[in-house]
Length: 454
Ligand code: GLN
Image 1 (cartoon, rainbow, N blue to C red):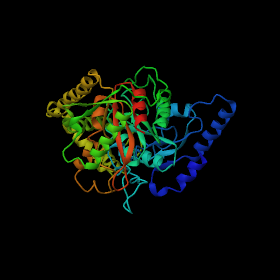
Image 2 (tube, rainbow, N blue to C red):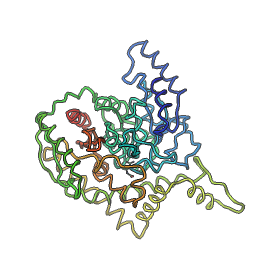
Image 3 (spheres, rainbow, N blue to C red):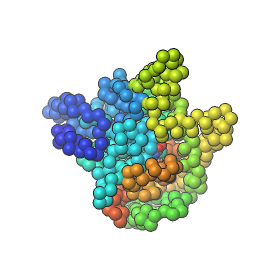
Image 4 (cartoon, rainbow, N blue to C red):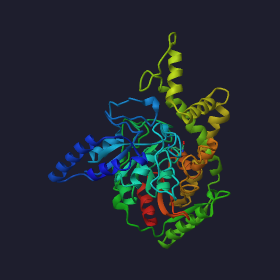
């Protein structure tokens, strides 16, 4: 804990930690020492972690990197962080992210962007997003692991951009209680870690049934670490042809081939498969996610939480809402609220929202058909490129940024588990990630296949 706290002090330029909690860390570390001395200490006893700012942590600023939650100190602890602390983990502080987890570069944060510890010459790169602070902190050894959340790729894309491992479990594995909601039917928490083994250990502590979240699954949580044998002989891995996008860089193609060969060498059978509705995933996601966000974000009204705008003489409650939301939300969040409100409006509901829901069902069915045909896991690149330069994508139109999620959003729409593992470097020396997609509730098998790729 002390080494991490010192490392954080020396790494201010990364802007990964946005609220530091050294006092809490020292108290938790001292308690962990006592538990270790007493014997029978739990898995994570004394392990220092960073927590994404989207998780409510009792008495500690939890702002979802938004100005609208300025000054908000939750009265309660999220289920996931409570479980981590019960297992002995230590909180070093809260980590930077895109505002309300909307973004792929950490540049929509009210705290300014986090910076990728990897760089090319002097060019500063994004750590990805929305869990950019988590990825940067783990990659720079500021903590041993971190929590992330993934609505459309926010664990897997930053993991790929920083050379670390991140897993989004099956929808319903981790409780969403106490995690600031973005798109409730897609949001899942998961660990970001140095390698597959660490991810397995963290995931076990994070998941489990919680009556406080009606979508939380009442299923036993296996010992994922014990399932890491590296033996994948006889497994069938699917390569979905629709993920071979037009204009895909050669390096990404080469990475994919390398992954396929590694799995084959480990004894897996590789087969080409088809997931025919893939091309509709991104448009469906960018209807469904904003629709749910516009509804979830209606609660930020200047009354219940955080920031309230200064009012002028004669302003009523409507002006208070308007001014507070105008000041409190950033550009990307406003864009999502407007898109979401539009697609849910009476005249357009069927044309957009309902249609997107139907597409979602078809995408889910594509995966079900593949698994029914005997596929154990699906291998794809995690991202269409390595980390890009800060500012590079924000100057283009927002759709350029959305295209980053092309390989990851399908997994959220289908509610499946997906993992990104580092798989070598590109020509510039930047990390690239491979994604494996697994059967629902079979994170143990998925982690083991990923382990064979390490
Ligand atoms: N980049 C995607 C978005 O902006 C995904 C974000 C996420 O997974 N939280 O919506």
